[in-house]
Length: 342
Image (cartoon, rainbow, N blue to C red; front, side):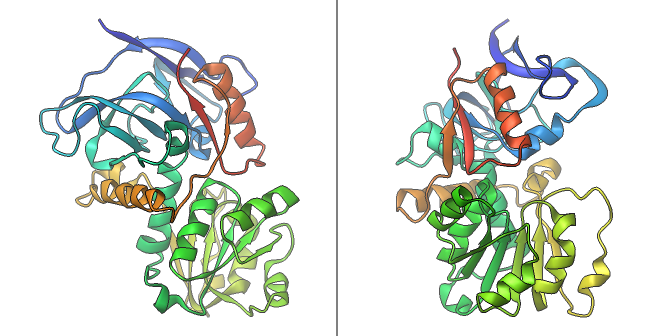
């Protein structure tokens, strides 16, 4: 039996516990159907990793592997594959319904994989897939924002949580679409980062939103994309959104939202969950392949830049525990990446 190194869990524990993520050796998978087997070169971490790992009483008989951002090289292609062949450099986010990519080799359906941007190294590319898919789908698929800059003149988008991975990509995509971008940030370093991504204005998400918007000349905004702390900002969002505007969110509120706050303005509220297509194997699942290729093309033409902020070293349980601690602090900027196995 061929084996490979991986980082996984059998118990769902606080990240301070050294058993929360452990180095393991597991069976190396083989490609079949439309799956490709990828030799993992670099990975990045996302809030979904910490949510899946959140403490509970469940025990896994087989180690569960997390990790939903991979850049690597195709090792093997299943017999039904038509998009990739061995040797191709790829990047992708994978499926939450399957084992993640924190392993030396990883199986993934080729329909949710893109060609790695040629102008980026593997660490830079690993920072992009999940956040790029999320931001793209949120803006253009869920909120139905036009990609034509001429149609968005005079329209503004408020991004709550703009310094994180998703917010950083959403800012860049929105600017390309001709929107005025207002990003929230609360520390000097996050304000600088948000501006470096292209935001026209920044406001502080710890303070009421509407007075700050009005102070910079906006009575309301037609589009609001809330990346985190939806419950905390819900009342402020309902005040700040324009009549007939659109609000999109991606995080998980712990209590029901009062949707009646949006009724008088006839506001549209939509969710974005980038795993929907792969989880349900929707008929348009291949759109994520096309989307990632468009992202790669934009990167290679200097229209989009990686949001890599820090490489924490090789892929190991110790380094991944450190990465999870950073994410759980809610103070990360951009993306944290790990590269290679020792």
